[in-house]
Image: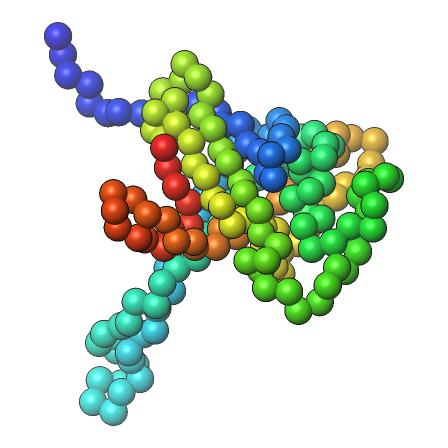
Length: 174
């Protein structure tokens, strides 16, 4: 039997935020992105603006998705900072100014669809401290067309013990 020349993985994930379903998404699904942070060592007297070294300063993880359902899960995702009421939705409030992100972040759990190649690659991702990305644009189209809402969330690192060792992780894969 001939060996495969690639190992593609495909399969949809369902998502819940604070235990509420985020519903159906557009064809892009959930997009995880990582932004490494660092400090370049350049602009020196001997090497001009040449990058000669750098310092690793961590990184930030985000997840982006575009909902195609108007439900309590997606509304909760963009009302994490404050809501005046649940009816009518959306109902925005500033909430308490000056709160730490970790105090208002909630769990985001993505689970692979059973029977797909993605079912074990990974089967699930859990970000225990996720919230609407600060300074992101939340565009809600009120029109005769399907209401789609693009949401971008940040995943804060949290302490997790794995195999007896404590790590700071943005999410846990199972």
